[in-house]
Image (cartoon, rainbow, N blue to C red; front, side, top):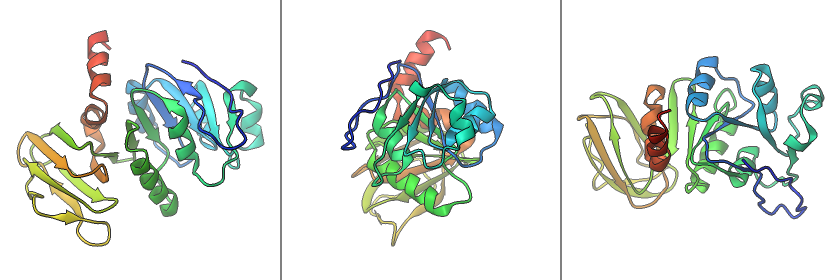
Length: 242
């Protein structure tokens, strides 16, 4: 892992965390210990987004970095952190989640503590997730996981598993194995959406015209979500016998 201090006052994207392991990115919203534990099983390197550092300290986690504009990082928490681990990004045009995704290189990022009571924050997270569609990231909530669908993917799911599709921009697609096929539908956030669909066969195949579709699955399908956005990471993990 390679940490470098942020030194460009123009807000240029400079890498801070570069690792071959999965990263658990901790936000400031509340989350249950079992969600964190599940994330750490796949992604042992921990990075905090601004005030998420307090959550990480609460769970006695070793932080590789804290990244953000630091407006949510309380003084007591900051005093416990090594100076070289705290990276101040003054840019006010982007969220802390955005700042983190721009500065982490990892085979998978599992974002914990980015859903919760603040609906505006949650919407901003999903918007950023789509803007960084090339970044292999899964957002974990108390009951669900969400990720940006690749142009094509196959999911191995128990029949009857809830599978929701939510478009963040106009997008079309085709499917096999869904209870309600999506061929011929133009999805858009202000018209047709695809929530509360479900798997009708053990394998669901999806293809999309653009990387603008969120896939939302039950949290116990995390491994399939990771395999969808980072297939090489899963293969490497199996090869290591972990």
